[in-house]
Length: 219
Image (cartoon, rainbow, N blue to C red):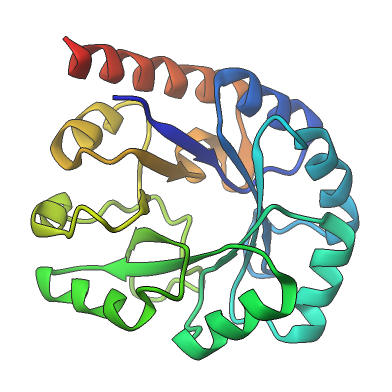
C-alpha cells in the first residue's frame, strides 16, 4: 500500500518544506477568512511556487465566487482546486470550465446514507474528499479534528477516487488506513500544536506512522 498524503492549511516555508520533505504528495492552502489556517493569495503564491514539481498545490475555498477564485488562481497558480462548501454539481462544472483545473469536492459523511450525496457529483468532480460533519456551532466546514465512522466506506464503489479526511493524526492513521484501505489521506489540525500552527515535529511523526502502516499492510 502506497499512500498519498495531503497536508492542508500550510502558511510558512518551514512547514511547507517539512511536509514535502516528509513525503507529502499534495500541499493545501486555505482561503477562508474564518479559518485559523487562512492565508492571503499573495502569501500563498511563493509557497505554491516552491512546491512546483515537488507536490500538487491545492487551493481550498468555501463557497467562493468567481471574483474571489480569479484572484486566488491568478496569484497562486494552483494545480488543483478544492471546493469545501455547499457548491452544487453545476457550480463544480462551471469552476472546472472557467479555470481548466481539476476539482476536488469535499463531502461530509455522518451515516451510511450520506454516500448518496456524492452521486450528483460523479463524473463532474475529479476527486472527492470525505470529511466528518462539523461539530454543532462550528463555523469551519473542515479542520475540526473530528473523525467520522469509517465503516461507512465499507461498501463504497472501488472506482471512486477519494481522499480520507477528518481527525487524522499519528495515533489513529494506522487504523484509518487498514480499516478503509484508503490510498490518499488529508489532514490539517492533526499536525498542529495550536489551531492554525503547523508543527514540524508532528508532521515528521505523522509520516513515520504512515510509513509504518504501509509496511504493516505490505507484510
